[in-house]
Length: 135
Image 1 (tube, one colour):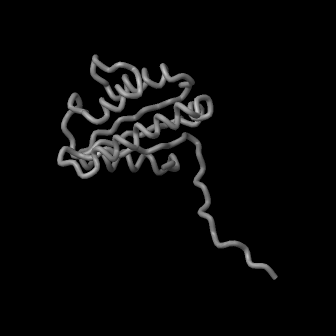
Image 2 (cartoon, rainbow, N blue to C red):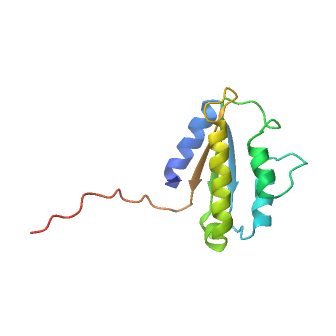
Image 3 (tube, rainbow, N blue to C red):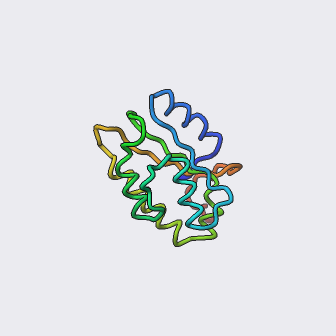
């Protein structure tokens, strides 16, 4: 899901006000898998045993025990389009890992995980309307 950046700040504030843990993962300038893993490690404060690969990231996102307890967790991924363009296969894998983690936490009594994708300066996309009528 891509959000208009003007809608991102209120979403982050509402999540924090609701007692959710908010993590901002800025991917500006990230163009390699190693850079992505490093950003994830720092932003999410991943444990020392994090192995820097897809399986390790998935395992960590399905654990989250090293993070403070919260009724929910919001991961806001920003400036992701450059990485998605540079590494489309890895971007697809990253999205799969995130989706699996969101599914894992759905309905958990230990809190949910929500992921938002946002791009600075992105304008809202118009909603598609009905096709134009002819003649």
